[in-house]
Amino acid sequence: MSYLYLEDQEAVDRFLAGLTGVPLVAVDTEAASFHRYRDRIYLIQLSTRDLTAIVDPLAVTALGGLGRVLADPAVETVFHDADYDLRILNRDYGFHAARVFDTRIAAQLLNEPGIGLAALLAKYLGVTLDKKYQRADWSMRPLLPGMLEYAADDTRYLPRLRDILRERLQAMGRWTWAEEEFGLLEQVRWTPAGPADEAYLRLKGVRTLRGRQLAVLRELFQWREATASQLDRAPFRVLQNEALLGIAKAMPADAEALRGLKLLSPDQLRRRGGDLLAAVARGLQAPAESLPTFERGRRPPPDPAYDARLDRLKQVRNALAEEIGLAPGVLCPNGTLEAVARLQPASVEQLVDVTDMRRWQRAVIGPALVEALSKTTGG
Image (cartoon, rainbow, N blue to C red; front, side, top):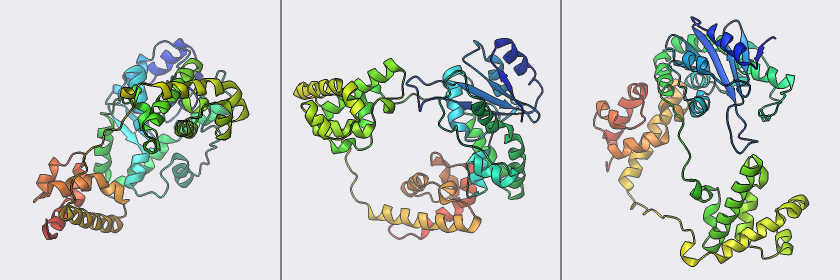
């Protein structure tokens, strides 16, 4: 199947201008956080019902026309799993979408057993996607023809899939649910990560370390960040988290001890061993007053009554989810149930005070939750 590959400003401007008056455009992006330290959008795919184009944002200086398309409420923009695409479009260009349809969310509300794009296209359109380039480095140039074909497939079928899923949502009486969810996506903006100097404290498994080990990990982490930035390479491609934690825990004093940990390849030992041992030494020499510590929040006292309410709410949620054919976490996530258990609303109207609870959720499950709370002993 054909597609346009647009890699000059005039061609991009002409294509985007041609979208004026088009009621529906499918959108996808390709980034390279799996490969690069400094991530950005490296490809943008756009499909109307008749045409697919792939825009190379490295080859053009202005994409304001795309921003105008996304922000036009007369244009429905169709994504599959829109959240990340919307965030990075906002991060890189300041764009936001005014009218979204997300085929992944639609599939969740339809209780599809497979909500990935490949599964949905296979089921509804008989299309088999080749996922060979799922982890491809989209920052590379030139891109391989197979990569471009893969990228085009991510949007070329979305308009037809959207039509099928919308029709099913309407038939099941769940279209208003989807509209509310899509409306929330229209508010999505990029949010920066937490403080960079504390990022090492968020690594999985870090709480097994103490005192000097944490100081060593801090030095190792800072070394890896600096090296990854210099190479413009994803940090895990410089050194895996498991290796960082293992070295920090063992605090090896020399090359033999580092080699004995069996966490590094011979090539890594040769190229990185000296730097790693220097980082370990810096951590060991850090002043005592600078040793990292975890802020330990005070655990709330046991509350059997709250636990009983939450357990009852989960039972009610799970039973209703099975009855109407919806995943329990889609019908009402556990975090929302916890908020309901704390609030103890006496009416459905009071559920409006539960943060993140949708209108459709209040209507569908709200009465059952309120009734369950009224019957829970010790409430």
